Amino acid sequence: LLVVPVLAVLSRWRTGRWVPATPLTPALLLMAAMSLVSMAVSFDRHNSLGKVCGLWLGLLMGVVGGVAMYGGGVLADHLAKRDLRWSAWMVGVAFLLTVPFGALAFSLESRALSMLCLVPSIVAANFWQASTLAHAQSLVRLRMRAMASAILLLIANIIGLGAGPWAIGAVSDALAPRFGADSLRYSLMGFCTIGLWVAWHFWQGGKHLAADLARADDPA
Image 1: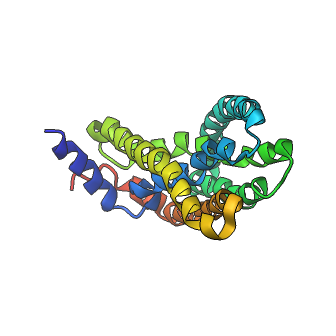
Image 2: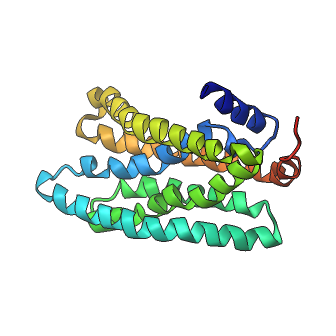
Image 3: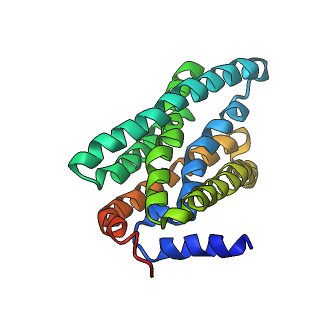
């Protein structure tokens, strides 16, 4: 019985061209941002300070992440009044910023500076939720909206947060014979580039968002 509404939602998403509504993108979102942050403590080679790094990262994720989630919704509403496309494009801009700052975070020796450079990733990992969930719900019919949010969050968490850290670790293990102790560093820096892919998705999706929303109530 559950398969029918799931397929109905996916079918509605496929009829439009708003690329970020495809199930892959939220997974890429969290793989590009939150997975990097969650692996940052493992990157700390000085185990005696691992608890301190974890504490500060937890505070950053809680406080900065909460503000980013709320701020993303407020900013999306403000930008949509002028140009609806920017309610999607703003998420792409946020993920573009994660690429240079994320790479810098894992190349610095200073823990304080590294954690500061992770702030854009923490922001991006939460910034997308309000606007993207609102768009995903608006692109389906009224009775499909709860299922649309459930599908988006399920795939985002299972693939993004579940497979993300595993993939980073697997690449690190593959690089270990050549780079030794720095293999995790290069793996994390490589995964930062996923932000470029995410930004492209939101750029493309923003261009078609208005047209897709206009036909969202089409019974076909």
